[in-house]
Image 1 (spheres, rainbow, N blue to C red):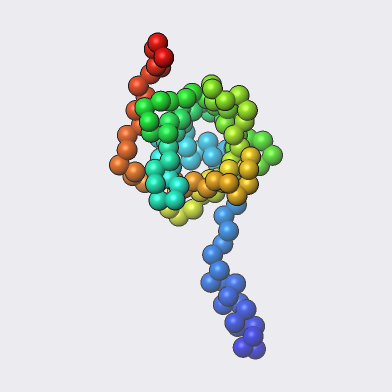
Image 2 (cartoon, rainbow, N blue to C red):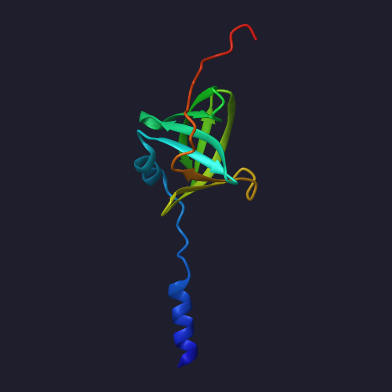
Length: 130
């Protein structure tokens, strides 16, 4: 009896793993927003989510890259103007925001949605004459 109670308590105490978001859920969460991402306690970058699954990414260095996203095989994949190969991620909605796991190299990179990184997403434009 005590073993069953212990097992039930353990099951209910364990945090439920979030399921990866599908394209519709990701679109509903992101469309019209600018999300800031962090990694290891430091700012990583920001992305503006526009209409028709278009995006604008910046590493918060003043340079921005336009692209788009699509859903494929349970992943959310991004293609940017300077990188034609898809960058695929899984996104889970957690209580503090999104958790993103890079799928091109599993275990290589995890990002979390940061509420306020104290950084602005500026797009300064192309470097002319460089």
